[in-house]
Length: 349
Ligand code: ADP
Ligand code: MG
Image 1 (cartoon, rainbow, N blue to C red):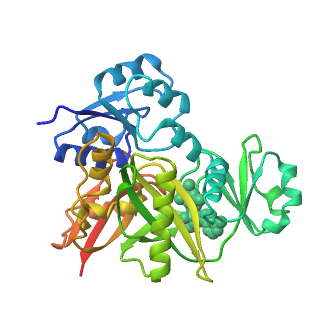
Image 2 (tube, rainbow, N blue to C red; image 1 turned 180 degrees about the horizontal axis):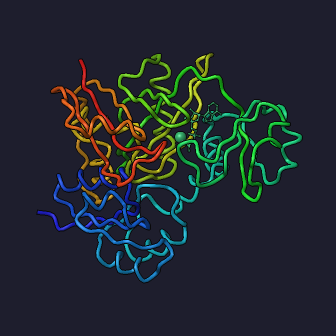
């Protein structure tokens, strides 16, 4: 029996699913979160409520665990770096700092000769005046964005005045791509050239929020291979430990672009729980806690539907599931518009 205690910063659905996966391999989890209602406390062995700058609470948490990981990007670098001086934080805090800033993230990807959308940094409103060749474009906050939050579609320069944009924040402006498809590739890296990679997942967004994911993705062999190669290069270059997800765009001319990197387990990988021998969550824990790598085996094709806002309600009322259907309720206390409340995975031949 292992005696490993894993600390997880962040207590949302990803923290819950990490805790469930940890329990399966007899690893204890302690969640640290700044939300007293964090749903992951329903699944972890222990829960500590505290702010990310509460040094005392953070120290109490650090002393209890052997390894630390995190389930979302927007944690202050200083917090992760301080913890890392005492216990290993994986993925490394410097990786999180790089990826949490859209400009640094995209510059890093381009340096590897991997295509992204065209983009530029926007520090102040007047910067936008000379950027008409990037229109139509999407203005995105440089940090802290998720589920399409902090994004503005700009068709022409005059649109900006009609929108209530807070220019005390930094942004990037990114050219709008006529999308044919979106896919993601999830990889878990254990060390040098030592990784497990899942096949590309096809994703459909509604209102910039992920709605459906499925394997197999309906893509060409070229895109299948290229997306995996790019995900491997990114993980190797970062010397990443744990599970990472690369989100891609495919345009109408079959060009592949990296959209963004998530230094963590990812919503599109929920189907790996039922469709593979080892889920993205278990693999993340195995890598972070220096456990043995087990070769991946795909068990089934699968599709996943996110239940957003009140879409969860009918499923909570003793909904009859088929044998090949798996329902997850994140047990969030309050149903909110655009909030991810649960998901359903269906396996198929
Ligand atoms: P978030 O951090 O909120 O996930 P993303 O940059 O991934 O932000 O954007 C969310 C979604 O918005 C994407 O998955 C895609 O559907 C759409 N989107 C974002 N950027 C572009 C773009 N440049 N062109 C077309 N669609 C985009
Ligand atoms: Mg995204």
